[in-house]
Length: 286
Image (cartoon, rainbow, N blue to C red; front, side, top):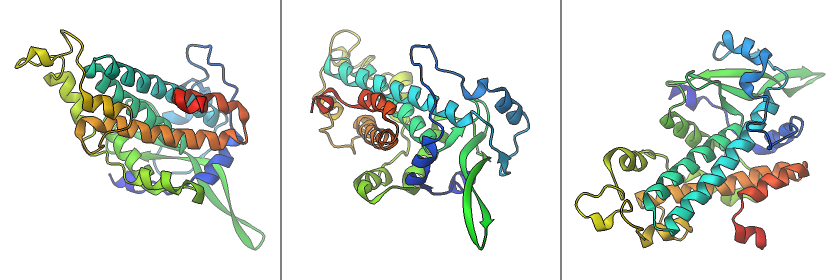
């Protein structure tokens, strides 16, 4: 946890302007738009001898590759969120809740990557910070450049718990413009404690699909409408209920991703299609 607590505060207006310089050409008709971070030969060479907490020279192509993955993660988030809502509405709460958790997972990764905190690879304990300020003297004043990278060594590789710990830190320390005060307050209030537990219980210990005590309360045998989950999936339920948290968190990640990508999209209209993909049909119609 020490390394996570050292992650510096992020000022979104600075990150937004930096992203504008590194937006790649996106071709989502490909199975996975490349090159990915791991496809870059120069990055792969850098990662072989990556040392934590040391300044590293920026490697061309890294930020473009990360942004491609952000778009893919955002689309996975939107897909899983829609699957969750549709599954709940059609009477399949088990997969609705699991898809709701998956939506949160992809939304959190997209959020972290937009703020410049990126996993090096699945089994590594190192996380890359791709927007590190370097202070230098310009005449009689000091200025900042973002032409270096650094890596953080964390307690674990990218487990789900580690992702939630990083996300929690970034939610609490992100500095947003004054016009996004409500979003900032909502992010700071999010609770990620034991966020995986309910989903894991469904998968490993049974749930709506293996209710041995009451087979009528089981979506393995027939469709099962649970009004509280229907309400949660539409954003109308109390988020403090443990099985409602995924839908509440997904709504907040949706708001955050739409805001951040829209802010980039004001200067780069090509991102507008990705914002539309995140919105609910009623929002788009409005």
